[in-house]
Length: 228
Ligand SMILES: [Zn+2]
Image (cartoon, rainbow, N blue to C red; front, side, top):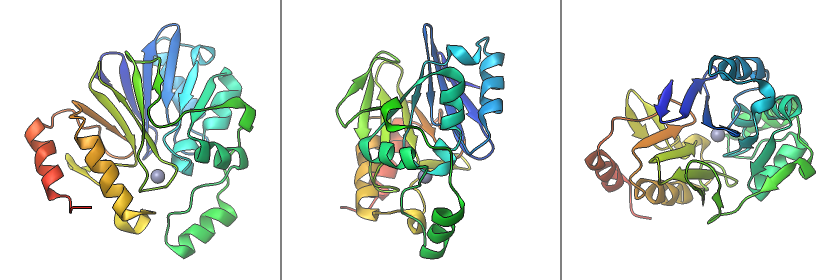
């Protein structure tokens, strides 16, 4: 589904993948769980593009449901991968960041590896960078849910890619549940930073992208967040 001009949303089985189509660039934001590469390439095909036309893959954070298919997509397309420095370290080892309850974290660390991408294939961005997509895509460090978390904002289109810094449920915008949040104070601070951008589209990692909220809705949500 097109959520903004040339920005498409794919629900890749519970986690969202976004595609910005700007020939000669085709840019993916996050990659879903492992073995989603066929579904993602099928989706690109419906948009009229071959796997080899995928040029860039941006990573919000190294949770497996966001980077699970990264290695397969990169290998098939030769796309340039962009991630934060901490996420890049984790991706190069196929590891997830630590932010889950202890038993769940142990299960993830022990049994749930995903395909790694060599570090020399990953370009590193940092807070304040602007990437040459969607009229200038701002890179925002948004730690909280995980400490390696980044978001991306396109002022030209109003689209904000928030990864797991925010999500939606039944049309409502929420923070990630506290029990899977590494740093709750940082998560609130990051949410406040994101909401102050007044995005017209909130492209979240989980839940339907929010396209119908009003500025008042964002202000009300800001006021509902405890002071940090
Ligand atoms: Zn996550």
